[in-house]
Image (tube, rainbow, N blue to C red):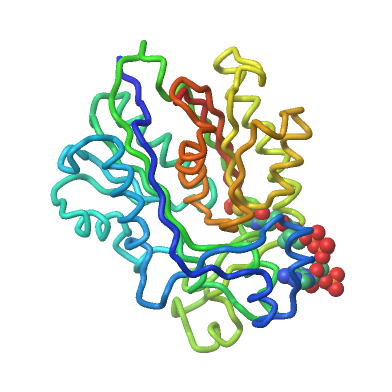
Length: 333
Ligand code: COA
């Protein structure tokens, strides 16, 4: 029997810092509103010529270098994103080519904010069955090119940022303490329209995209913020408990919580509900906003750099997002 070990993590955010004050020049918003509701102070936006696979490449290169593997050892690329380079094919193949690789498998994951944990679970299953030995898992997003950056879209536009994170997973022995212990995945499609981009699409009565749809702004993300907020708190707490129960663990057994970064208030309320001490929760949203599939690997990379994530520590991650989808993972670093 095999298990998966997370060998390393890497990240990349573009240099362009956009503060709340900068946003207030584009739309009717204030630093006070954004900070109070979300904890976000700034985020990164890419230059026009930069694409999602470019961000992913830089994060992947750091993860590969830190893992101490040759890139040719990668058997599978799992690429989680809701902001792909193109409609098809998936962005994993563009990353593969930029890495100078050919032949290895490539798979894209579309589970938005739960995408990294869904990808972690997929990678773990391929490794556990013995099919693959080494998997590169990337979460990368460019939101700045896809949001309505006017007052009409301000409820969404202030929350999201651009960035990428990556990990290298490797087959290990089930007795290796450093391994993924379990992953837990859920979805409830009844709420799919509460956080979505409607167009382009095949369910729009005719052509997948028309000028009328663009004028209406159907290409921009729409969100029922209050509903997402309340569901996120409930589901993240629930799925963390599910992971702990499966491993006969208590909250005290976890050394570090690396949650998805949607809103600092969501993570504070999850921690409060579960009575997790604040110092055990590692947040990065203040600097980067919500980078969707990239938040957890960015958190891993920064926590390692800060000396807050060390070899042998027990970690719990949880995420919630569009779908609705939600997920958790329990792993020893
Ligand atoms: N700046 C200023 N005002 C804004 C604004 C902005 N960026 N965005 C919305 N508003 C306004 C609204 O128009 C509304 O005005 P009205 O009351 O005159 O109609 C008002 O602020 C809404 O405020 P409030 O009810 O206090 O908002 P909220 O407490 O629901 O907070 C969110 C809004 C989006 C911050 C919050 O719902 C949230 O974080 N939800 C979860 C979002 C999330 O995590 N998404 C990603 C999931 S992976």
